[in-house]
Length: 333
Figure 1 (tube, rainbow, N blue to C red):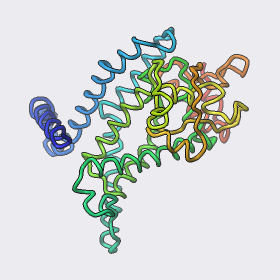
Figure 2: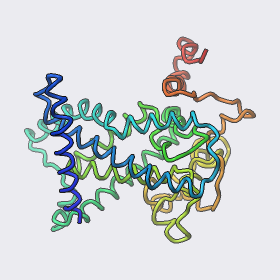
Figure 3: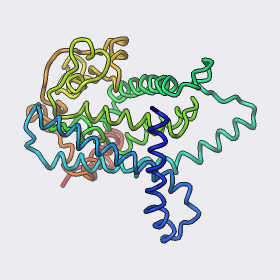
Protein backbone atom coordinates (compact mmCIF):
# COMPACT_ATOMS: atom_id res chain seq x y z
CA UNK A 1 0.00 0.00 0.00
CA UNK A 2 2.78 2.44 0.95
CA UNK A 3 4.71 1.62 -2.25
CA UNK A 4 1.53 2.18 -4.29
CA UNK A 5 1.05 5.63 -2.73
CA UNK A 6 4.73 6.51 -3.24
CA UNK A 7 4.59 5.43 -6.90
CA UNK A 8 1.39 7.41 -7.47
CA UNK A 9 2.85 10.51 -5.88
CA UNK A 10 6.03 10.14 -7.95
CA UNK A 11 4.01 9.95 -11.16
CA UNK A 12 2.05 13.09 -10.24
CA UNK A 13 5.26 14.91 -9.32
CA UNK A 14 6.87 13.96 -12.63
CA UNK A 15 3.82 15.05 -14.60
CA UNK A 16 3.57 18.42 -12.81
CA UNK A 17 7.29 18.99 -13.23
CA UNK A 18 7.38 18.21 -16.94
CA UNK A 19 4.18 20.07 -17.85
CA UNK A 20 4.57 23.19 -15.74
CA UNK A 21 7.73 23.62 -13.66
CA UNK A 22 10.42 22.54 -16.13
CA UNK A 23 9.26 24.85 -18.95
CA UNK A 24 9.05 27.73 -16.46
CA UNK A 25 12.59 27.06 -15.17
CA UNK A 26 13.98 27.00 -18.72
CA UNK A 27 12.07 30.18 -19.59
CA UNK A 28 13.71 31.91 -16.62
CA UNK A 29 17.17 30.69 -17.63
CA UNK A 30 17.58 28.31 -14.69
CA UNK A 31 18.53 25.12 -16.51
CA UNK A 32 21.20 24.40 -13.90
CA UNK A 33 18.54 24.28 -11.18
CA UNK A 34 16.42 21.45 -12.59
CA UNK A 35 17.23 19.00 -9.77
CA UNK A 36 16.29 21.55 -7.10
CA UNK A 37 13.19 22.50 -9.09
CA UNK A 38 12.11 18.85 -9.14
CA UNK A 39 12.41 18.69 -5.33
CA UNK A 40 10.46 21.94 -5.06
CA UNK A 41 7.74 20.39 -7.26
CA UNK A 42 7.36 17.59 -4.74
CA UNK A 43 6.96 20.09 -1.90
CA UNK A 44 4.42 22.05 -3.92
CA UNK A 45 2.42 18.91 -4.69
CA UNK A 46 2.41 17.81 -1.04
CA UNK A 47 1.16 21.24 -0.02
CA UNK A 48 -1.61 21.23 -2.62
CA UNK A 49 -2.75 17.78 -1.47
CA UNK A 50 -2.75 18.95 2.15
CA UNK A 51 -4.84 22.01 1.33
CA UNK A 52 -7.28 19.80 -0.62
CA UNK A 53 -7.72 17.52 2.43
CA UNK A 54 -8.17 20.56 4.67
CA UNK A 55 -10.89 22.03 2.46
CA UNK A 56 -12.71 18.78 1.73
CA UNK A 57 -12.50 17.01 5.11
CA UNK A 58 -11.51 19.29 7.98
CA UNK A 59 -13.56 22.27 6.76
CA UNK A 60 -16.58 19.98 6.55
CA UNK A 61 -16.06 19.02 10.19
CA UNK A 62 -15.92 22.70 11.16
CA UNK A 63 -19.25 23.32 9.44
CA UNK A 64 -20.76 20.21 11.02
CA UNK A 65 -20.18 21.07 14.66
CA UNK A 66 -18.32 24.33 15.34
CA UNK A 67 -17.21 25.24 18.84
CA UNK A 68 -18.02 28.91 18.24
CA UNK A 69 -19.15 31.18 15.39
CA UNK A 70 -16.37 32.87 13.43
CA UNK A 71 -16.91 36.59 13.98
CA UNK A 72 -13.42 37.81 13.06
CA UNK A 73 -12.92 36.80 9.44
CA UNK A 74 -9.86 39.03 9.05
CA UNK A 75 -7.96 37.12 11.73
CA UNK A 76 -8.69 33.86 9.89
CA UNK A 77 -7.59 35.32 6.53
CA UNK A 78 -4.19 36.21 8.02
CA UNK A 79 -3.85 32.60 9.21
CA UNK A 80 -4.55 31.46 5.65
CA UNK A 81 -1.52 33.50 4.52
CA UNK A 82 0.68 31.69 7.05
CA UNK A 83 -0.64 28.33 5.83
CA UNK A 84 0.01 29.10 2.16
CA UNK A 85 3.57 30.25 2.90
CA UNK A 86 4.34 26.93 4.57
CA UNK A 87 2.25 24.47 2.58
CA UNK A 88 3.25 25.68 -0.87
CA UNK A 89 6.89 25.02 -0.07
CA UNK A 90 8.20 28.58 0.19
CA UNK A 91 9.44 28.26 3.75
CA UNK A 92 10.82 24.75 3.25
CA UNK A 93 12.73 25.91 0.17
CA UNK A 94 14.36 28.68 2.22
CA UNK A 95 15.39 26.15 4.89
CA UNK A 96 16.66 23.72 2.25
CA UNK A 97 18.87 26.22 0.48
CA UNK A 98 20.22 27.72 3.72
CA UNK A 99 20.82 24.57 5.79
CA UNK A 100 21.44 21.96 3.09
CA UNK A 101 24.90 23.14 1.96
CA UNK A 102 26.00 23.72 5.56
CA UNK A 103 24.97 20.22 6.58
CA UNK A 104 26.59 18.63 3.52
CA UNK A 105 29.89 20.31 4.42
CA UNK A 106 29.70 19.16 8.04
CA UNK A 107 28.75 15.58 7.17
CA UNK A 108 31.53 15.43 4.56
CA UNK A 109 34.06 16.57 7.16
CA UNK A 110 32.72 13.93 9.59
CA UNK A 111 33.16 11.16 7.02
CA UNK A 112 36.69 12.33 6.27
CA UNK A 113 37.42 12.13 10.01
CA UNK A 114 36.13 8.55 10.11
CA UNK A 115 33.04 9.26 12.20
CA UNK A 116 30.24 6.74 11.64
CA UNK A 117 26.78 7.82 10.47
CA UNK A 118 23.67 6.84 12.43
CA UNK A 119 20.81 4.98 10.74
CA UNK A 120 18.18 4.60 13.45
CA UNK A 121 16.12 1.96 11.66
CA UNK A 122 19.28 -0.11 11.11
CA UNK A 123 19.72 -0.67 14.87
CA UNK A 124 17.12 -3.46 14.68
CA UNK A 125 17.73 -6.16 12.04
CA UNK A 126 15.07 -6.22 9.34
CA UNK A 127 13.28 -3.01 10.37
CA UNK A 128 14.54 -1.03 7.40
CA UNK A 129 12.97 -3.66 5.12
CA UNK A 130 9.47 -2.93 6.51
CA UNK A 131 8.59 0.62 5.42
CA UNK A 132 5.68 1.22 7.80
CA UNK A 133 7.66 0.07 10.87
CA UNK A 134 10.57 2.31 9.93
CA UNK A 135 8.15 5.19 9.36
CA UNK A 136 6.50 4.65 12.77
CA UNK A 137 9.87 4.67 14.56
CA UNK A 138 10.81 7.97 12.98
CA UNK A 139 7.35 9.38 13.72
CA UNK A 140 7.70 8.53 17.42
CA UNK A 141 11.19 10.05 17.60
CA UNK A 142 10.05 13.24 15.87
CA UNK A 143 7.01 13.50 18.12
CA UNK A 144 9.06 13.10 21.32
CA UNK A 145 11.49 15.82 20.20
CA UNK A 146 8.54 17.98 19.19
CA UNK A 147 7.05 17.60 22.67
CA UNK A 148 10.20 18.88 24.38
CA UNK A 149 10.65 21.72 21.89
CA UNK A 150 7.07 22.73 22.60
CA UNK A 151 7.74 22.62 26.35
CA UNK A 152 10.77 24.88 25.77
CA UNK A 153 8.64 27.36 23.82
CA UNK A 154 6.45 27.68 26.91
CA UNK A 155 9.20 27.55 29.52
CA UNK A 156 11.78 30.03 28.22
CA UNK A 157 10.70 33.67 28.26
CA UNK A 158 12.61 34.60 25.12
CA UNK A 159 11.06 31.74 23.12
CA UNK A 160 7.60 32.39 24.52
CA UNK A 161 7.95 35.97 23.24
CA UNK A 162 7.86 34.48 19.74
CA UNK A 163 5.55 31.52 20.33
CA UNK A 164 2.92 33.73 22.00
CA UNK A 165 1.88 34.84 18.51
CA UNK A 166 0.59 31.33 17.84
CA UNK A 167 -1.50 31.44 21.03
CA UNK A 168 -2.83 34.95 20.42
CA UNK A 169 -5.46 33.71 17.95
CA UNK A 170 -8.87 34.24 19.53
CA UNK A 171 -10.66 32.62 16.55
CA UNK A 172 -8.91 29.29 16.25
CA UNK A 173 -9.58 27.35 13.04
CA UNK A 174 -7.89 24.70 10.92
CA UNK A 175 -5.74 27.49 9.42
CA UNK A 176 -4.20 28.41 12.80
CA UNK A 177 -1.53 25.70 12.91
CA UNK A 178 1.05 27.70 10.91
CA UNK A 179 0.31 31.02 12.63
CA UNK A 180 3.86 31.35 13.99
CA UNK A 181 6.58 33.93 14.06
CA UNK A 182 8.94 33.14 11.17
CA UNK A 183 11.95 33.18 13.50
CA UNK A 184 10.17 30.65 15.70
CA UNK A 185 9.66 28.42 12.66
CA UNK A 186 13.32 28.76 11.65
CA UNK A 187 14.44 27.54 15.08
CA UNK A 188 12.12 24.54 15.14
CA UNK A 189 12.58 23.53 11.53
CA UNK A 190 16.36 23.73 11.84
CA UNK A 191 16.20 21.22 14.70
CA UNK A 192 14.14 18.78 12.65
CA UNK A 193 16.24 19.13 9.51
CA UNK A 194 19.38 18.33 11.53
CA UNK A 195 17.60 15.53 13.43
CA UNK A 196 16.44 13.94 10.17
CA UNK A 197 19.99 13.96 8.82
CA UNK A 198 21.42 12.60 12.08
CA UNK A 199 19.14 9.57 12.37
CA UNK A 200 19.10 8.72 8.66
CA UNK A 201 15.62 9.76 7.54
CA UNK A 202 15.32 9.55 3.77
CA UNK A 203 14.08 12.72 2.00
CA UNK A 204 10.81 11.06 0.92
CA UNK A 205 10.22 9.80 4.46
CA UNK A 206 10.92 13.25 5.86
CA UNK A 207 8.35 14.86 3.57
CA UNK A 208 5.78 12.20 4.52
CA UNK A 209 6.48 12.63 8.25
CA UNK A 210 6.07 16.40 8.04
CA UNK A 211 2.96 16.20 5.85
CA UNK A 212 1.18 13.70 8.11
CA UNK A 213 2.02 15.67 11.25
CA UNK A 214 0.84 18.93 9.70
CA UNK A 215 -2.53 17.51 8.65
CA UNK A 216 -3.16 16.17 12.14
CA UNK A 217 -2.20 19.57 13.56
CA UNK A 218 -4.69 21.25 11.21
CA UNK A 219 -7.39 18.98 12.62
CA UNK A 220 -6.30 19.71 16.20
CA UNK A 221 -6.66 23.47 15.67
CA UNK A 222 -9.99 23.13 13.88
CA UNK A 223 -13.08 24.93 15.14
CA UNK A 224 -14.91 21.66 15.74
CA UNK A 225 -16.45 20.25 18.90
CA UNK A 226 -14.78 16.85 18.59
CA UNK A 227 -13.02 14.50 20.95
CA UNK A 228 -11.99 10.83 20.61
CA UNK A 229 -13.62 9.35 23.71
CA UNK A 230 -12.08 8.36 27.08
CA UNK A 231 -9.79 5.71 25.54
CA UNK A 232 -8.61 7.07 22.18
CA UNK A 233 -8.23 10.57 23.66
CA UNK A 234 -5.14 9.06 25.31
CA UNK A 235 -3.86 7.62 22.03
CA UNK A 236 -4.09 10.56 19.63
CA UNK A 237 -4.33 14.31 20.21
CA UNK A 238 -7.86 15.52 19.46
CA UNK A 239 -9.23 19.02 18.75
CA UNK A 240 -10.66 19.05 22.30
CA UNK A 241 -7.31 18.05 23.82
CA UNK A 242 -5.35 20.67 21.92
CA UNK A 243 -7.93 23.41 22.52
CA UNK A 244 -7.22 23.08 26.24
CA UNK A 245 -3.60 23.87 25.39
CA UNK A 246 -4.80 27.12 23.78
CA UNK A 247 -7.22 27.99 26.59
CA UNK A 248 -6.72 31.37 28.25
CA UNK A 249 -5.06 30.94 31.63
CA UNK A 250 -4.75 27.15 31.32
CA UNK A 251 -2.90 26.02 28.24
CA UNK A 252 0.13 28.27 28.45
CA UNK A 253 0.29 29.06 32.15
CA UNK A 254 1.04 27.16 35.36
CA UNK A 255 -2.27 26.56 37.11
CA UNK A 256 -3.58 29.86 35.74
CA UNK A 257 -1.17 31.93 37.85
CA UNK A 258 0.33 33.92 34.99
CA UNK A 259 3.69 32.12 35.02
CA UNK A 260 4.88 30.12 32.04
CA UNK A 261 4.04 26.43 31.97
CA UNK A 262 0.83 24.82 30.76
CA UNK A 263 -0.74 21.55 29.67
CA UNK A 264 -1.15 19.30 26.63
CA UNK A 265 2.10 19.95 24.78
CA UNK A 266 1.99 16.70 22.78
CA UNK A 267 1.75 17.16 19.02
CA UNK A 268 0.47 13.74 17.97
CA UNK A 269 0.59 11.29 20.88
CA UNK A 270 -0.67 12.27 24.38
CA UNK A 271 1.56 9.57 25.88
CA UNK A 272 4.32 12.16 26.32
CA UNK A 273 2.02 14.41 28.36
CA UNK A 274 0.98 11.40 30.43
CA UNK A 275 4.58 10.28 31.04
CA UNK A 276 5.80 13.77 31.96
CA UNK A 277 2.65 14.81 33.87
CA UNK A 278 1.44 17.67 31.72
CA UNK A 279 -1.82 16.10 30.50
CA UNK A 280 -5.24 17.64 31.09
CA UNK A 281 -8.14 15.45 29.96
CA UNK A 282 -10.97 17.69 31.16
CA UNK A 283 -13.84 17.78 28.67
CA UNK A 284 -14.01 21.55 28.20
CA UNK A 285 -14.22 24.05 25.33
CA UNK A 286 -12.73 27.31 26.55
CA UNK A 287 -12.07 30.60 24.82
CA UNK A 288 -8.59 30.70 23.29
CA UNK A 289 -5.88 33.34 23.49
CA UNK A 290 -3.27 34.75 25.85
CA UNK A 291 -4.17 36.19 29.26
CA UNK A 292 -2.44 39.54 28.64
CA UNK A 293 -4.72 40.16 25.63
CA UNK A 294 -7.67 40.66 27.97
CA UNK A 295 -8.60 44.25 28.74
CA UNK A 296 -8.38 43.68 32.48
CA UNK A 297 -4.85 42.28 32.04
CA UNK A 298 -3.52 45.17 29.96
CA UNK A 299 -4.95 44.41 26.51
CA UNK A 300 -1.63 43.60 24.84
CA UNK A 301 -1.58 44.08 21.06
CA UNK A 302 -0.32 41.10 19.04
CA UNK A 303 -1.08 42.68 15.68
CA UNK A 304 -3.86 42.28 13.15
CA UNK A 305 -1.88 41.80 9.94
CA UNK A 306 0.96 39.47 8.98
CA UNK A 307 3.77 42.06 9.10
CA UNK A 308 2.47 43.71 12.25
CA UNK A 309 2.46 40.33 13.99
CA UNK A 310 6.01 39.61 12.88
CA UNK A 311 7.26 43.06 13.93
CA UNK A 312 5.58 43.01 17.34
CA UNK A 313 7.04 39.54 17.94
CA UNK A 314 10.52 40.97 17.49
CA UNK A 315 9.56 43.71 19.91
CA UNK A 316 8.56 41.17 22.57
CA UNK A 317 11.82 39.31 22.00
CA UNK A 318 14.28 42.19 21.91
CA UNK A 319 12.38 44.87 23.79
CA UNK A 320 13.43 43.74 27.30
CA UNK A 321 17.10 43.92 26.25
CA UNK A 322 17.16 46.91 23.93
CA UNK A 323 14.04 48.68 25.16
CA UNK A 324 15.74 51.95 26.21
CA UNK A 325 17.24 52.28 22.73
CA UNK A 326 14.92 50.55 20.28
CA UNK A 327 11.69 50.07 22.24
CA UNK A 328 9.86 52.94 20.49
CA UNK A 329 10.50 51.29 17.12
CA UNK A 330 8.34 48.34 18.11
CA UNK A 331 5.40 50.41 19.27
CA UNK A 332 2.59 50.54 16.74
CA UNK A 333 1.68 54.00 15.56
